[in-house]
Length: 190
View 1 (cartoon, rainbow, N blue to C red):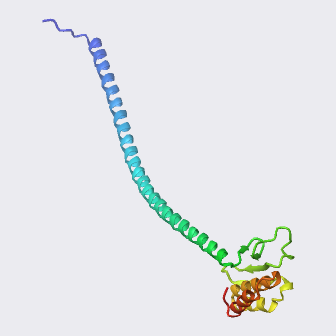
View 2 (cartoon, rainbow, N blue to C red):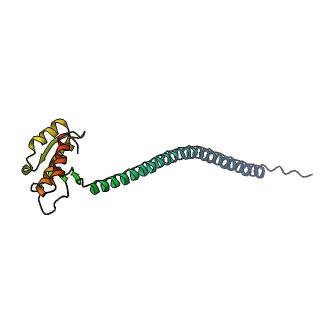
View 3 (tube, rainbow, N blue to C red):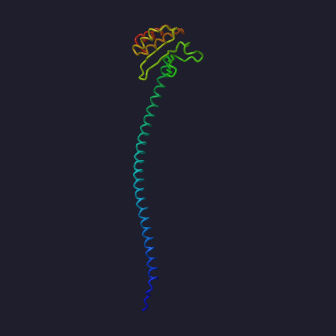
């Protein structure tokens, strides 16, 4: 049996094995670190996914509520349009309020006249809570006392009824109709 007792060759072989073991250890450490980072990332992403799913459910709930509200609003709008058609068929005046201009039109707005010239225009203003602060019908209608009363009693409908009655009288409508409008206005009805 022949033993090779050359230390340099054995040392080189051990050095190679040692470097290989060190390299494998570093690679294993790197793999483990990467695994831990991936596990933490996975945990964070799973938590984020749960949070996003929860937000999605909340958004779906809100969307469903908005859809129901939209359906209710459409039904209400349709009912109001039917009511407006019925009012026009009964001969009631059209009433338009333009808050940006501070004007309420009783009857059809007159395009060719200015707001100050139109008999059916009432200058108005309301506060944020809807309280009537000012109501000024056309001076030719002679309704300044009713305008003051409307503001004092917060009864804008009474003033609108009086304006409509005076408009009917000015346009020569049947006096019975105008008288009925006047009687209704005096009791505060529109």
